[in-house]
Length: 537
Image (tube, rainbow, N blue to C red; front, side, top):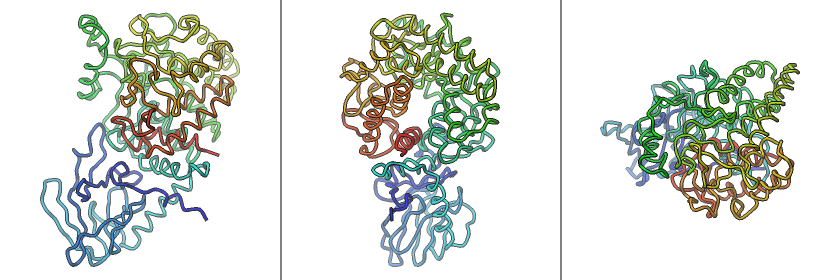
């Protein structure tokens, strides 16, 4: 009999904290082996949200009791002591003949006997014997929802599914609706782009939860059609005035770095700029619908998606050429890409590929809703937008990226994403696939976010070379839509092998080593979600 999925997940209490679905509490190990507990908060390091530190469990003779195992449902110490969640806000120690010692947030020392149970954090708890069992039952229920995956990927998929479970938190500004956050380490909110990728996996285990990720964003759509970048506990991020101060400083240093001082100063106008994420809403909605059909949900989101599509083509096309631009680095989702070294506005080929795709998917949704004439109109616009993209940005060799009206020399896989349209002439599609499989982008662990042979390639710097699963996933989707299933299969295999062998579910990977790259966070939501989807049988 195979090992239960729950027991395949071992927590190191560093990259993989002990926590629970819906809980803001994180139990982590310090360098000296003591445990400490922090809270997950928006744009805040756990080190700044400590609840208690220097937690040790001691036997009756004073000897420290070591940790025997840390699993999703409990931390097991020697001597039969367990730490488990009674509920999202309550951590309980169970056992007898032992003692807990710790420092509170003010550095004051505390100690108490563990005599059956000890509520470590929280106000009350059920009887001690029921706490670990109830925790195991909760996690067993969650793992039962994981879709079937390949046997050789089962262990890594279990870790990914656990990651999705712990990243589910009630978001206060979403009325307490449960949102899947990108990471428990600071990324505590529902990010626009991330939510779509999260829904890709959730649709297999809880379609209504997948739908809720879309609803959280659309509930805060602006009257002009813009869908905000982030919905977090205290509000939304929908324009530059909403940015945390640290983000503004970092962007000021990075954006326009390829320009001279005068050009950089001219590019920084100081005006309020809307902030969103790439338009993949309809794509995610349609994937959810195909897995779990729900016409009422399609009807609920159809008009908001139409308004979003119109926003891109009316409010985000400053030069009026019919091709939308990203007005802010964050709106691209690729905020540290070399594309932004050339200024604060850019038009890489991915954006208008997404818009062409969204026109087509709006046609699918309209058809499902019986709006046949509208469906035909959307498909006509998909074809026209693809033709415009080719006419304005295809130079016979590649789709070019433009920033502030001038060509960007750096080569990125964004120029391959017109494959997503599924509407390219065969000769152009063949050229893109050949480019993908060339030494520029193909390797043992494709696809780098800057070409291997580009001067800007850096295997560890965010969006400047590392592999990101969402880019690979979109390329796989584009290959299938454009009629290259064998290449899609090969890219899928290389991607899942990299993740299975790479040690964790990271934000991004070094394409040369397959290890965690640079400052990539761990326990990353869309990496987990897309790995689960790619690993399915």
